[in-house]
Image (cartoon, rainbow, N blue to C red; front, top):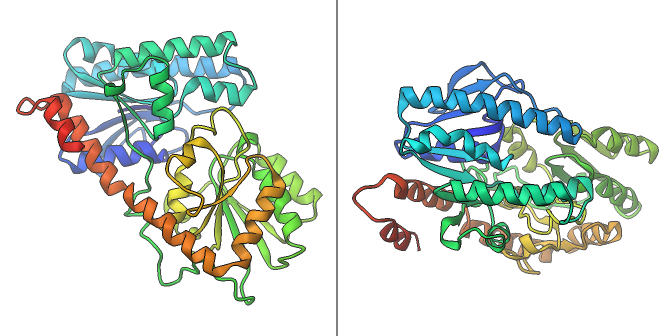
Length: 400
């Protein structure tokens, strides 16, 4: 595997690498250091090779320079390791999409190539920089996506909406498969004895939680403003948010500006194990995303993480989420609308019977897509690339 992210910090890369290792495959991961671990180590059965790069969130030229340097270094590192290990499969995680071409030598020598499209690059760029699909960089990213998909033997992506998007731009439907970002069940183990499951008995704080990237498009500031209004009705409400990003300072300044230091706590960037433990003690998880061309198609992993722990979820009413959840499964709000977030929080707080029903229905959706199911599907898909005893068609029919 090759990824321009630190390992094991990227949850999708970690889940998939460990799933393939558990299936008896020898798995090596080439990644960036970014402050994680030594240059070479074995992590839960996965051999990790860290290159001396860190992600620095800056301008477009800086992104291009960092991607280019990593692509160049990863190409030679992978080629060297391929000569030593003769990989059967090379699994590339975007972004960038063109990282797939660092597998050129293994592909020419017969290795199969998997391209794992975590996110659609054109939509990420449009959302981040506020441009439309006619922008020359967006058109260039669409072209790069097309050739990257063509180069790969198998394409993976996390949800149905992303798949439809890639197919609409020319990816063959049969070539792309959905492996959802379901949480690791070894970490998110379900509601424990200490789980409050939405308790609001008046003797405890009513805790709202956000975790994930803290950028403007993720709307943490909207959540803070909503909490500020809601605490007039719920004096004991608190908001805890976890993560990192270029919008942290703005959010903390807003907390001070609104005089909310006693109601809002920033916990920073912590391991998944800490996130799972924290979820046990909250009342509701909040996905506060602003409207964007990217978030319209995304299905945030955090939804399943809260549901797996028996917590209700407040989420935006967007296409990627509605592909999986109905009106009775989650608490929906209109993306980008602070008043709508306020109403959803109040709804969670006031109606215990409805809350428990939504938790039950939401958890049922999660159970249909839990990682045990996704893991088996991933293992079987990878086996189709090298299995000489069963045809791809036979394997596909088994999966269906």
